[in-house]
Image 1 (cartoon, one colour):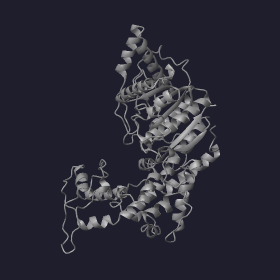
Image 2 (cartoon, one colour; image 1 turned 135 degrees about the horizontal axis):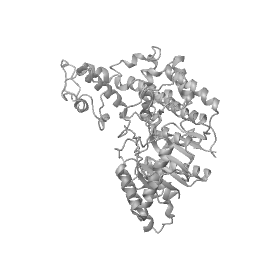
Image 3 (cartoon, helix red, strand yellow; image 1 turned 90 degrees about the horizontal axis):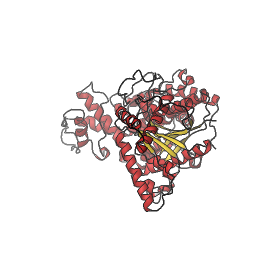
Image 4 (cartoon, rainbow, N blue to C red; image 1 turned 180 degrees about the horizontal axis):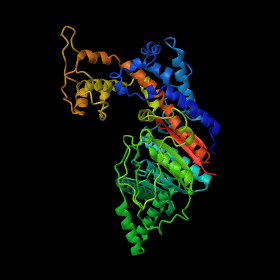
Length: 550
């Protein structure tokens, strides 16, 4: 049984504390680590913090700053009270990032037990569900699938709608593994085709092993369609019913009318490129026969979505609140930076609707992805910048592991900040230029060789890393760099890591603010919040909200 985490009053008080704290340290959460040198970010820290932080080793940064579970902190020097208070407050305000059973584990040090024997295969997931699925995704679909099944059992509801279903990995586990009736919606037709292909392969494997005991109704129904974050729940149900009719007509081909309806639907569907989480936030065309898509009698269902991107997660919660057919929801959100806000209604990466709504469509709402609740909206300092929300997507646990291992990956932020400096020297107007990840950049030196001490320092040709980065912003790859500046900045790598760790300390706090706002929104709309927790997903954590209707 899921149990409430906070009373309504506790939620509101926590929201006050969060907005006050995040407002005070917004200069950290809003800063870009690639501007460490160009904006002299180190000297924006309180002067009393700088001497105690600059000489910390990487394991000390993990133990003394980021790991909230560490109870054996040994300080190399006396820390100012303001720094101790900053760290303690950040840890205290953020939702716990481990389950009760994992509370005593060392942060970032333990992988799920199901991967101890084979790092590539979950021992708890049947082999037929592991095909085409990476280890992290195996763990995710098993964890979330079991929770969805538990929610279905508790609500006495066997139907599930999986939004942003991608290649259908979760859908197949819910359908063939757990016996649920699933409709999967995915905007990318290519992914829908692949999902159907993988379904066929799984059925073939079951038949080959003479294990085909799955009821016919448990075969998943894959749909290519958009989910509009601005549209009403009625539009969403119309979309589900229209595709259900089209699916049935495609099988039976009973009449010319059904064939025409199917043809019309296909001509109206708009497809989108796959985004980071295989989910798209845009408009579904609704020019279908009103007699066919009337809303009465649609069966109840549980709503789910693995990594619902940006506003899509907020949209699903609004459908849960407003739609009488949604009995429960598991909300696994991601890509907080793509959430729309009043201050930034079109953040980078937001998928724009392919066409404005037509007169035949219902009027859309003007709600934003954050804040959702009236309470948070009225709090001074509730605003969260794009950068703060982007930072909330980072896994603290992963960075802690790198720090404790002394990973070479830690140098990448320093490299990129150095590159930003030389880019702006040549092009002052080119700020935070989008440079795609340079593969294995941590293995590349920023300079080709050490210049002997008896040779006068001369501008030298950039290393392969610098050449690749300069070329990606249309600057000459052979642009001479000042060796003294390069050497000086390379020595600052420790400070870069410390500063990034300070910003990362705020990431769970920002995520807590987003999730808490959604909890308060549900309370304001008369819906109980049954559980909000962080589920261990392979080597990182994922925020999961579970909600039930009475």
